[in-house]
Image (cartoon, rainbow, N blue to C red; front, side, top):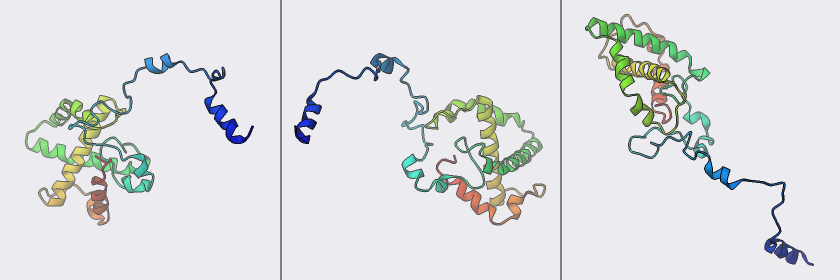
Length: 186
């Protein structure tokens, strides 16, 4: 038999499936089919924070990675971004002092973010893998960091007692600005 005839015969063959390949179709269809990584809110109007598709990110991974500061859960805890966590705590301390000067209870920050936890989680396309306390702490620190940064840079708040290298080294602010604009750093 010529090679073409052998190929046609093989394609039209109805030989039984080899016994070494056993797949139970019922187990494939009966397992939980709800997405574990992709949230149900993905694709809805409320979900607006997505990861960069791998096909784009792999072209230049560093283009989508923050250099100085992580904001939000996608890059949270990465080793090269931990230095900024100290500054976030310093900025939070500064804001808490300002709140107390004005007679506002700083616990209101935690309470306000806690009540928004469901909305926060629904804004991300993926399961965040964070406990409630971790998420609320991260959002409070990140939010206060951004708020303090904007207030100081805009001149709305004078920080004579906030002697922070972020404001003394001219190259850091442009890098932070670039990090804040990254899609996955929200």
